[in-house]
Length: 111
Length: 159
Image (cartoon, rainbow over all chains, first blue to last red):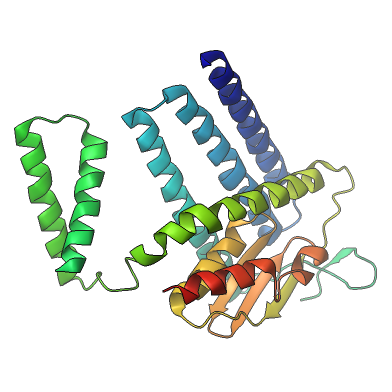
């Protein structure tokens, strides 16, 4: 049983680390501000939550697991609000999003 | 009174779970702090129907969150694949649509769910108008009248 929990926890941690790396890679690779925020959202939802879940499995039914769950809840409510505020502020201050044109699918700077 | 009991039990449970040391002095201090924080929050006008939507909790935790978790996993995987693809197949799109929620709480739940799902971010949120930035044109096309929209309205209807 404890071996199964260890395996599940390791899988969660590895998957979480993988999504964090992908998110960071996307953050570097995306062409403009708004698309970078999309890459960061992979990192903050899947990456952070999977790592927290993996750690909670390691902690078992203890207060530590409850605290990890609370951190998860905080991220769950706070991170979309923060992303929304960030993107809205960027749009209001006049950063033009890079948009794909309907026909070619290529990214262009048409507003 | 009912709101006092609800908020107080929440704060006190939070104290007990974070503290983990159950000696009389600390538990009493916890009661004192919970009452004090409740008093502060009430003075600041933070306590109303909207800031403590306890009545939605059961439905949200057992029905909406698991579904949302599945959606996050699906779209997170999709965005990850696009990031790792050497051709970077993205088609960023701004899209406006009309959400069906009527209350502020319902609109916030919908907007936060959109942002929480990788690949879509809500930019402007007003009653009757959402402006959403999507990483792909397909993601943008699926927003209006989506399953998420339907589920949020259903959740809101319980309130």
